Length: 297
Image (cartoon, rainbow, N blue to C red; front, side, top):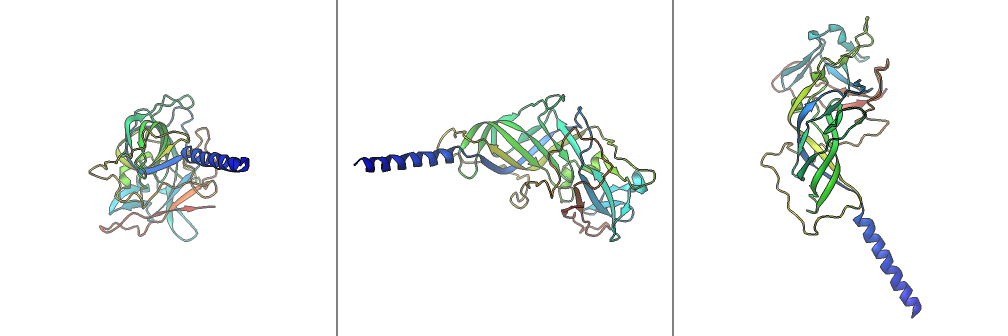
């Protein structure tokens, strides 16, 4: 009889332990969002990061998207154009850390809240921070209500968020600030060298679509066990949010999406190089921006 009691008691404890583990698990919500705000380099150590975006161009250092000229090295310095071992022309750009003190974020999975101002180093409190490489990646904290679209359950609290804008090589890449906008081109191989120098001190983002990731911290209980339906906006900011999920960078193979703001410029221009292959450099109505891939040296 006593043995049966201990077996039953042990099973009950195990069930409670399992339930507790499930209830306390961290939840990752993937959705879409829209970011608006002014981005500027951080006031504390406003240096380039050590990531390089390499853009394949034509022989004049020109890059086209959908038949439109997006960038031309001839407008700045023809010596920016380089040639690789396969005879392809390219221009290198440095990635740029950015912050925003007035940034806003809207999303069908977020409500009754806003991005929280966070003081980072000696900068003014920022609504979001991030980096501009071949896309803009923003990070911050949202205080309000988050709805899990998989279960319909709502959570209230402070959530870490990551938003990834379109790559400049995408059809809608022009909606996101890029290295083109901040003129972060360089060529250390030129004689004399052409170092990267930011020539744009601020950039206004207006309704930039992002792939959004919201983290529900472990242990946060839902407001109610009754699911709440999510009402999608009439116009989806991203046509197919599942086709381009936010990537999870690995230290050995991708660009650092959360760069150290304290790093100084290096003389090695090939650290973490993201190469964009241009599928034809001539302007045409049918031309579509190229895809991006990672080039490791």
